[in-house]
Length: 135
Image 1 (spheres, rainbow, N blue to C red):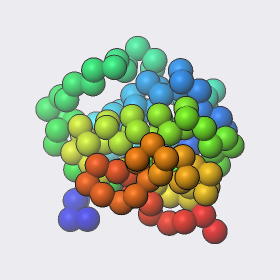
Image 2: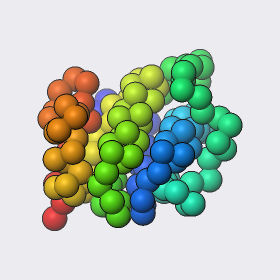
Image 3: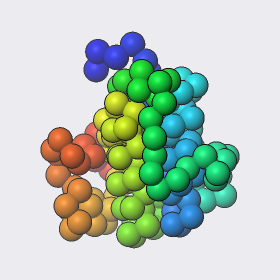
């Protein structure tokens, strides 16, 4: 992309629970604001503050200045379930609110099938693009 900023990389590790989703979104927002482009995220590995996220995300001036890509690496995700799909969908929404696009990397076929099932699997303006297939 033409963005001067490095892409943000979030690595989904282990099993994602519904309680992890606000933490993941808060971590994404924090990385966008601080410019820290790398991070690992999942259950107990997430260091973001749980109080930083609500269901109605709001943009700040610093967040709206961010542009570029968010790469969501799902290669170490242990379980492809609806909680993981929800996390990817919420991360996509958070990325869009930050003026970024979400790219999915190393997603297992099971996760891609679930994303297809709920209408989030194919490339399009409102769907996370698959950056590289699992190899």
